[in-house]
Image 1: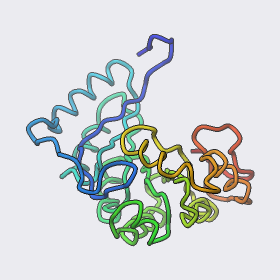
Image 2: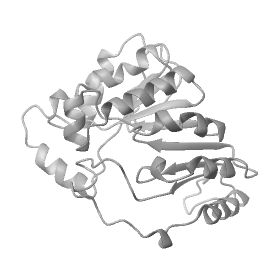
Image 3: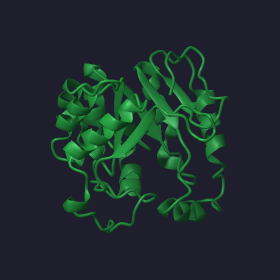
Length: 246
């Protein structure tokens, strides 16, 4: 498919659920949001049919997202069906990592090529502050499982939250130092709760900008072996000696 600007479109993101087991401060209010009824959500067969039509029109890559996609029951079955579609060359999943440990093998068996974990900090107290849940150990176990088994490529998306110095972003960056993990620092989306959170934090002293934070992290991230550290919207961010990319 070619869009109106002459660009080849070969990639589609599919949200399989609007439900999530976290309540990230820049994503939704603490009480959550009203969920769509099951009758209004596409069944697996319907998603598969849509992807078949897309593949016939040039789509080669599918990313499953949410909400939190791993809370959708029998997700590996859907993943396996999508990966079998002729023309689909890549199937990836985004996740917060809470359920990754228990679902890792089933996803890998289904043919998932890569998993992107949304992880803004490794600090337990900051994680609790940002997600309003106490799930950092579950995420750590899921990440450890993914690293040890190595059956899918691992990427980490980290949102530098302006004003929270205890976020310890360098600890997240250092995951790429000893492991084949690609760490990317991305801007907080200026929509929904993200706009309120940014307005609250930007006046704080020493907050800087997300680009400045990413540059500072990268300047300290030397001799990376297995993965890479980069900022998704800047060309300055390749780390020397890193293999792979974000």
